[in-house]
Length: 359
Image: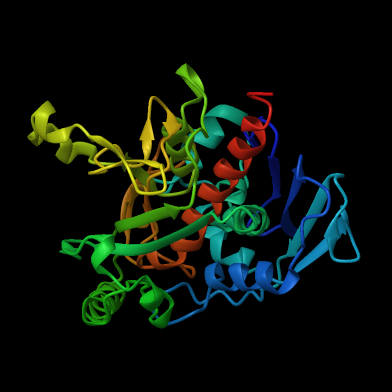
């Protein structure tokens, strides 16, 4: 329950943080898609731990194995199963919280729901599960690339340090040139130094990831309950540590009048319909309108900090939770490929669903 996403392009992830491995089964991917293993591995490498001193120092190669669904470099139309084996497990790092509930973690809620929990790194609730999503998202990106659709995310804020430029004014090719994944080099260095100072204090900090999707034609999405922005929101809010999602003008749109916020239509020289502004974020009525789709995802400060915190144990007694283990002081740099991957999965699903909408 709760480990499957999608209607046609459907994924189901499995595995725990300190189990044998994690993986994903992908159903509904059309036959004949070029399965570029190097690209999929490169996407996993963008997410993997140990990238710099401002990320967790857990050492995982995150190399994937194909179990089914691929033949001679092409998808076969049958279920695709991928597995990423865990290599650097240190379950003993979590023995001290076997009976304790860590503040703002899923320890208590998993215990309340299931009556049992895997305390080793959070088990199924660990962000390590997102590697499986990135692998599936990479395949979705390959499918979308053949359609001219591009998904790109970047870090726009860490704590109170906010990038003031709009995405149109940024060189997004700079995003992967620094450890923070902020396309503004000067701001990226400031963010890196701040995250590093927070790490040295044994604390953590949150931030924002912006995502831009170009090339989606008008017509993708479903009315009422399966609106495109609603599914993007669900996908983003399913990512660990996410606390907020907004698309288009978002919350800032309340500051505008309707006459200022409305996106007027016009027809270009080639006869294509466009909007002069894009407060709608490329989506109207839950369906893409052909403009850039853009949204922001808010990540909270990582719950695990290297400081002692007061809590309770499973018997209700007061307990002091000690800060141990290997954790990110700020999750947003590694969250960029996760946001992209989940967005790509949503879009791949809507592309395939849209093929059934008209003759």
